[in-house]
Length: 280
Image 1 (cartoon, rainbow, N blue to C red):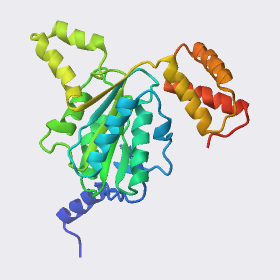
Image 2: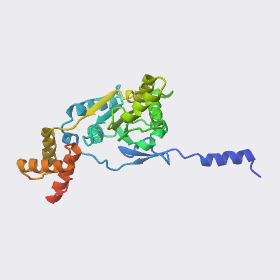
Image 3: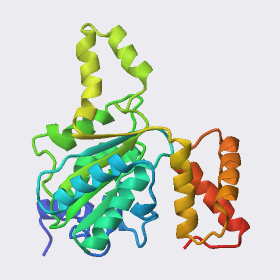
Image 4: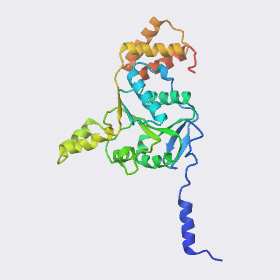
């Protein structure tokens, strides 16, 4: 018997609808990466991170983010967090290290889901999927910034302003080199061309207001830089006299024109290679 035309159309449309992700329970791993084309979550077997104890010179930010995350895991009110400031000072490393610390304390309680900044327009779709999970989840976006377009409006709505708002089991942690995630000239241009300049600027900077916790990162002192180097050397068993270590670290930082957590880690990688030591 020939199938009814409406039934054939309905069946065809059903085949076109993407299958729901099989990872909405997030039970297979502790970390995932959001895949926009397939609207799915790819498990990450091993997160690239360093222990929280090795992050030096950022103690206030470390303590605040850890406390906020612990409250979140225990079902207490917690804020979205924006980690902003100097390059290479451990913003993304801190987020990953805090997640690792919590997972070590209470396995299976907290998942980390990374969304790339180019996929922020799809954040609302991700939130819908994550809301179905019974796990607490950090959505992590590294180096978040906007140079134009309306993607920032998608982020605003997904965080707080939309009709659904942020799911109760989700908190967002983002890093940015800019406090308001937009270049100064973009904000100033909006101010100079708008009929009501103050309102235009308020619209642009209101995105950062969606993050209740602002953690600033600034260029490190030489003392903190040495503390980073010494901490890494001790942790990885690099047998070098402290004076020699300091001299080599200063020379390395001068070639890079900066002192930061990233430069310290790159120095340790170079030193470990020279000494024939693996950094495990």
